[in-house]
Amino acid sequence: MESVTTAHDYIEHHLTFLTVGDGFWSLNIDSMFMVWVLGLLFIGLFRYVATRGTAGVPGRLQCFIEITYEFVNNLVKEIFQTKSKIVGPLALTIFVWVFLMNMIDLIPVDFVPTLARELGFTHFRDLPSADVNVPMSMAIGVFILIIGYTLKNKGLVGFIKELTTQPFEHPLLYPVNFVLELVTLISKPISLGLRLFGNMYAGEMIFILIALMPWWIQWALSVPWALFHILIVFLQAFIFMVLTVVYLAMATEEH
Image (tube, one colour):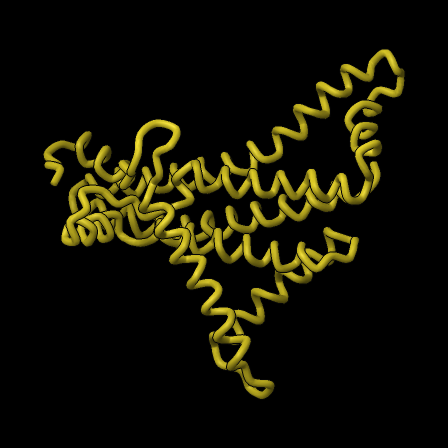
């Protein structure tokens, strides 16, 4: 078990993943575990409501699920004009899944690591969206969908034209267009993933720094920050979902 004696050790301990392997082939077991648990929680919760929902007066859980569904569904209809059986469920999955991952940040910073030590694990980082691998893997998945939707709706020739003929129309400037459009295309998944990671990592760090302060300062700072962080938790899930739908809409529409 790792000895935590100084503020540096405390911060390093809370920011260290439970990892197997070395280098590029290392796996953060704690992030993978939390992602799977929250994903199964999302599926189980929605399936429970879908199979046991009532047409009469709904319960609180059913009302919450229905409001969430209508909120995402209406937003997708406004942004994505083309009919698709994938985009709606994808948007709902992204929003709820990322929201659940972000909500872990509201658990007291010492609770899960202490529980993990009792179970024999020296490290356990419970916030998967603060692990850059998780947001970036989701962003890469969205990037693959962008390429797929572009090729499906515009074809390979249309995709090449989109990368080379705009914004400058002169043939001599096509190489310049290609560089500009390629940078724009690649920046989409990078900004999508790093935005989520950066905001959640910063929020986690602030909670850890507050935990190093005397108990009376912790109560004075942690409660207001937690209330404000609820907004960040929601907004980051909302932004990730909206940008995903917007990028897919752009892939299906002509300029």
